[in-house]
Length: 73
Image 1 (tube, one colour):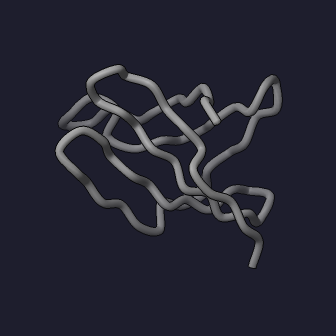
Image 2: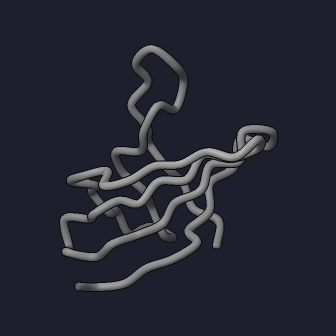
């Protein structure tokens, strides 16, 4: 599912996500719990303020974000 994401840019662009939107609904990210990389994308496991855990993927070539997974603990 494609999503819209706001990011923190420190020493590099789109260093980590801070907020994402599914439709018009805003999801605040309270913690990035894991991250990993492959040649074309950055993956982020994040905890939302709603208690959900989300897997967000940023495709660097297309500059598009996707929601790849979700669960609640």
